[in-house]
Length: 526
Image (cartoon, rainbow, N blue to C red):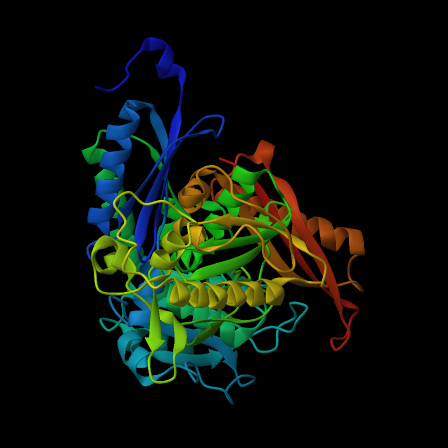
């Protein structure tokens, strides 16, 4: 029976769901962001079935009235998997506004043949583009653009438009969008590169193409999630998790699916911050397959400063600085008998752990077997008598050393750091590690990713180059701040709660006109 007490109707709940490669985690939070209940189910081949099962069990075990759930958040690996596996991607046409300045490097130059074949062959370079300060290099040739769009007709499902220095001056990209709607129809999805990536042309172009290719994927995800909620009588506002640890409206996600890439590790980092109360620490998230290590800075994941590859394609939009190693609860431990050598991973039994692990009656020695044998975790009916303690201790030394090395690689100094341990696989780690000041294992540590998904911060950011010959330093910073705030509001933030969480500026000596690159990120509550 659902608890329908009139007094309880005043309580508003939110659901956070995070779909991982091994498990799908779900968490129920109240309006004060207290964790009410968490559950973990195995990720299914049909991911939506796993999501439905997690919602069903969450409602059944928590006894919460579905009518009281007003917010629902989903973090998913659908888009990442689609790119890596080259499946379910749509055909995208590209207009690069950059001739003659950019013709030496053609579009899709660093793409492999399978991905090129999947996306399609309609990529064109037309005359146009801007200087770093927004001055026109070449005027846009509209007849040339219309000719290219006409060739795409009937052959593409989306269009990506990318211009030289378009984040500084958006006019040409917006004009090509108008022409695309005229030629290809008003309902043709169009991705404008200045809305996704930062200054670098090729990486921004790649991100725009991938975004267009993922539109069908995200549409299926959002539809499946909304249908699952409706089936249980949940009438909630639906949000999708971004890769910087914040949320966006489902309608915003339908336009920018590329922003969902790598949201899993960032959800864990945000959840770890919330559960532990720490704002600056390393977060070690150990799942069934991998260990992801990220840096918590002022309550948010540290962003990567390098270009990020997704499925072998370089992009430059915002991504968390994450180090992943092949150690998880399902990681396979082997003994090479002739040399008496123990090896750990990187392969994993994944969601088959309860079937294949030795302590569950299976035939494969896993990292979880090692942890239970060494007394790190108690499992009812665990069959530990057939485990060789010597092999388990040697495997544990390897696991510990690899995690300590990974932590060292993410530290910015040699000083010991605080580490927040989360994820179901965190039972693998001892209570002390080299180079670590203290280890914090918060309550609900095994569902930190789902809790992070439910927290409900919404962000926006900007990255622009300003000429300080034309405006003052303060004016440039203020313009960037205002743009970041507007982006956060567009993504679903309450304007009254939006704050600047990151602001940095870098003088660019190699550009004329006293150039300054300004990056600003704003975040606020739903």
